[in-house]
Image (tube, rainbow, N blue to C red; front, side, top):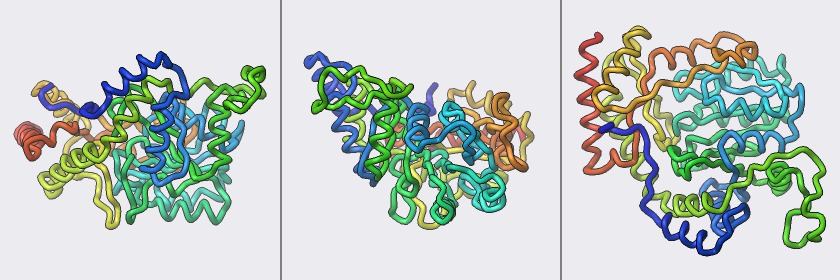
Length: 381
């Protein structure tokens, strides 16, 4: 592809730190570079504590276990998100309840939360910040959760660095999760993070992510190392990936600047185009533009798909929107109410190339992508 959807920005100290790990011969968990990464991503997220794990899905599962979610507990989840957001809940045998999204930023709709929350009586609720845009109703939903004593999980997998009124996403909930898969805001290949201001929740997350073995510190008697008190997961991030993660978080200002440049250029060029809509820029919100999606509202679903195939054939790497979770076979019975907004995003949406390298030469390649899009689009109107 001439115009890539996403690429990791490996222009920091990744090689130096990886060589340091190899020379140290410590490849496993709890490595030096991993610990430094955890400290730095916690600070970047505006939170006190962070635990690095092996995927964003593992992070959500770990967070759910740390909150004590169990069989039968209901958890409200937005219907338009990656399936990883719901898998971690199902793995706890909790019962997701899928609500539709609002049309501006594709986040969980607070109006639907107010409508269903007393009927559902959830133990927890999840806000997801889609494509790097802070969910529009985050503050209202956080307030609802505080007043009703409901735990709040923030899935920030796509939104590291995003803010609402200069406050970082992830700080509104009891616990936050991030993905550090290779195409996310920072990437190590595959990885995730659980972050929180609660030392108690951090300790529980570490317990579950390290096979439910409570005696794992250097101060504990060595003979208790393999003493398990529950059925936990082996989720901790290995040192090799921690080294890449450290290099990435230390270079995050450069990554963030590039992503924002690409996103703003798309907004400038496409924001006012007739028959086309983008995620909305909400006053006081600071998105990081992890991905840039357009909704071609005047085209049928069939034409949108054909246009997507045409763009791919032209060297423009695109992807579809997420399938609404309620339209996936495992999760269909979990829906509440209509799911029209999420389905419209899938049927009308095309996610455009958003690589950090599109920022080169004053976003020249973004201009080229838009020109190709405009040319191809004429064939479908």
